[in-house]
Length: 324
Image 1 (cartoon, rainbow, N blue to C red):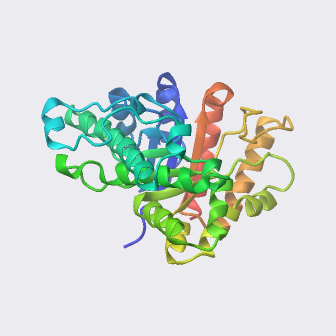
Image 2: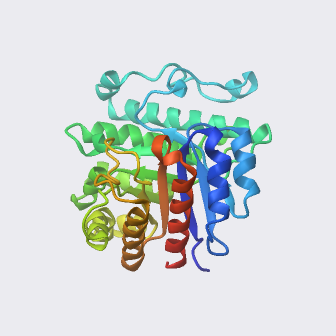
């Protein structure tokens, strides 16, 4: 059975979603392509808009290492509370405290946070909101830094909680999209030990797709840039069986390019619209030639929220999807 053809469009203001869906609908996306679309949090209206598109799949986003409301407390019904353990039921400790905990406590708090995200999905589905998958933003630079092991243990727990939820409340395994920084993917070149083995196995179990953040400056030869920024996928492909499995589900995560100065690369040289489109098309064509499981776009806000930007980007992704 051939793999599912999937593209991803992420992070927008809800008021701009109809415009984004119009752009995707008019993009010429290849028949059978599933377009997963989502921004932060779960929203019933957004779900309806996304799923009205033929092939639309609603995939809300959740933050990994940024404090959100879910860090403060559980939100379970009284009936649900009676069925789950009271362990880790309070406020998730702040970062400094988390890093000082034991490995099991740190992973336990991460698992609880992931379960709280699944609680939101469960409650939304029970209320009639269609949720097809999830996104986690992100495996950040911290997981490869000086205290990388501690951060990985916490994130590993989040992935576990998101993937499996609370089995005692009838949650089933549900895979999602995991965004990953270029720096974090450099971990794939390290020799594995028991902790890294557990990290890669949990990531593999969680991922429907892994999305590498490829945010180059739109300058020079786009094909050369594509080869440079594909290094995360190459590192995965050169690893053991689990990392190779992830490489086979790797999506090139890009950004529209008109929001400058925020670590997103893009149109730093002030190219014209036609030049931006030509550069983007060259990059995507080379990434398709190298081999990817799909294309994703992130950050349809500020300058990237304009209608022509959404239209150009959606058409470019559609062309890329036709090449893989």
